[in-house]
Amino acid sequence: MLCWKRKEQRKLMAAAEALTLIGTYRRFKPHLLMVLAQMGYTFLYFITEASFNHGMNPHVYITYRHIVAGLVMLPFAYFLERKIRPNLTLALFLEIFVLSLLGVGLTLNMYFASLRYTSPTFLASMVNTIASLTFVMAVVLRLEVVDPGNPRGIAKILGTLVSLAGVTIMTLYKGPLMKNLWHPLIHIQGNAVNHENWLKGSILTVASCITWSIWYIMQAFTLKRYPAQLSLTTWMNFVGAAQSAAFTVIVAHEKASWTIGFNIDLWSTIYAGVVVSGLIIFIQLWCTEQKGPVFVTMFNPLSTILVAVLAYFVLGEKLYMGSILGGAIVIFGLYLLLWGKESDGKELKPKEQFYEEHKDPKTQV
Image 1 (cartoon, one colour):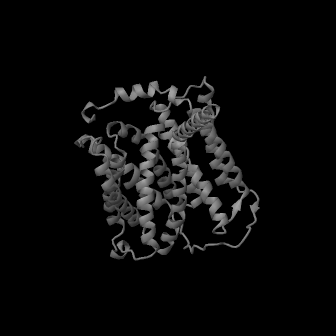
Image 2: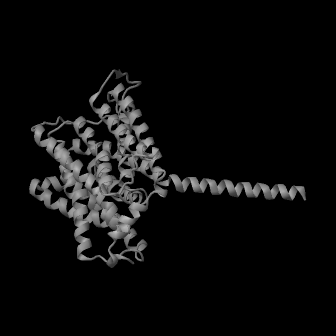
Image 3: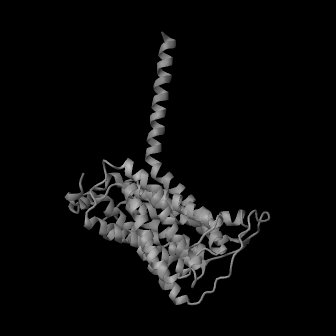
């Protein structure tokens, strides 16, 4: 009898432990997915750099990668979301058109065009301000609940400011140079970039950061009227590819620019299309619906940190103490923000009320 009771107790303890693990996984699932997404962006940096140095036209690359992403996501969207996908009205299509323009057709082309006129350091600094811009917009539009009288509300504000300070330090402060521990494992041959017009490049960079922030904010609204992340990802890729193709035809007249061989250009396009423009965009949409646009953008600086670390250990690039210090500050700021957002599940009444007020009954399934 005693032995039977002990066995039952062990079973109950094992069941309770399993429930605890499942609960913990569900609680931190968005966090884990966003970390994996930033790891995907990190690898994108290296393979894209190698492709561009090989001669790939950036605007052609944007067009091809989103065509690939659309083709890969289409069957999943069609079969898995047949029951939850709303009817696509003209107004909703125009909204998706604008969303695609902000996230693909306009923003990415401005971003890569600015590389011709500014330094990568300046570009990295400005791109990492997207999280702060998104936070301000989200607060103004009542997508983010911030109570200055609550410690968690203060943590959100401080976390955003601390992270912004961290990425600024990473960019503007070098400090002592860290000695390389071994010879580079991989060599990426680069071509010199001619910075023709710093003012033009700065304007393009700032404009791309603003439109990127608006894109993240707009996703939160569109998902309420079109709650099908796979389908929305597919539409954005196809529409964004068409927009990018129209722009590329204007700036790239040569037929050779559209030709890619069985080399790094092809692999970078496939990787960017399947993993980044397909899977990661879908992950970001899901996390935006679960946690909001600020949560998603606050993970962006992690890719900058990972790129700096991998570039140091794998490519043998220089690493300065300022990057290490700034990276530690970014992580601390991210922790503050995430701690502040832990109470959102109990404080989302204003946000839910806002969505209810702006919900379009025609798109409800």
